[in-house]
Length: 522
Image (tube, rainbow, N blue to C red):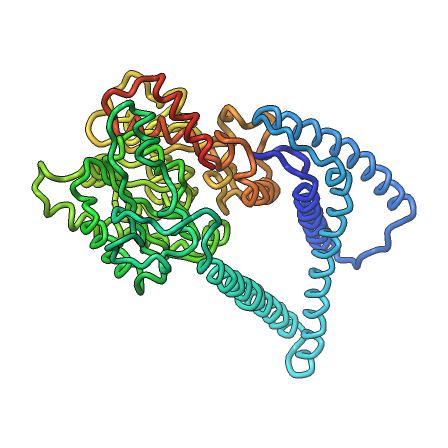
């Protein structure tokens, strides 16, 4: 079962881990079933006979070889769908040994916990009855295990990673320099010191298209884009950071530009260059971007432990920007947008209650790779129009909110009016960030039961427990595939922003040219 396909190509190490976990689950279910059977049969366990072991080893070996072969065929098909050429044969060969190691470790942990329970039960039996001793023993083992895993191991891991990445946050990437323009945070006259921006903040401020690059693309005179950023060290707390960022935005003249976008960052404060660069090219540089950092941790850890911080940062920044924006005369305001990728889309939604709130308070929004727990994304997707699949939902006939698997090929529903503010979600059928959910453990989602998206195998099907672990194993490698698949959003931002902003004078040839420029950004 572990060799069946999931969303992304699976290397030997990942396959071994998934196989080991699946084997441990199967073993545990087998032990449970045998225990229940013996309880009903009212007898003790019996030693297996010689022929039983022989049958087990022969059938197990044959099934494993057949499954291994089918698994390699399915992985080949997935790689073909996504254009992945990497295939590490030694790791594939090593996967059965990795599986055995993982299974052995999980079995050792399980038997260790069972041994601890039996020791506690015997100890407690000196003071209380046998049944009570067993019950209390199980409760103590479960409680201690939970405290150790959630407190000592998980929190200890998070603390260590937070410390390590806080040190990295004080460094600056090679080739990134403090700006000499007053139009960027950390530059001359800025209210935010360069050394407080953090590693990703300095990357964001120190890079981006030059005026000459934008002019070369548009063929017209361009302006230098404004970029504002507040790091964790710039102020204390999300509200203070947001207030400082807005004051620096006002100082730089951001509210006098034609377009203004509020970006909620991912994990460590990263802003996708493709997201912002596309916005700046399509606006001819007459724009401003503002963002703040809420964590040191990379996205794959923040995804699990920093959700509340992402919400607080997204809400605080938009409220601060909107508070200053709404006070301006209506005919002197920039067009206001909201954007975010991955956990950034989660935070970007935080300031809004629904589609009408988004439409009334912004001129548009662009969210890419929204996690499955996004409140508004789930609201729109769960209440999609009848007949539209979960991988490509249509909500309220696309009047305000729309979804695109590939914005370069069209945004359904085609031919329907899309007036006023436009809200666009970009999501790939093969993106595990979008589809991962704890509900995968016990229930089959629509995106599996319905016809699959363009880059997901038709042979993928749901299995209790197993599909959850397969998609979980896909998460850390979600960006290790070509653009347009998994959690890789790049050139699509060109067509996404073009649909949301509707800039004048942009031809299909211009979009093709800009896609090529943006695809080279990463």
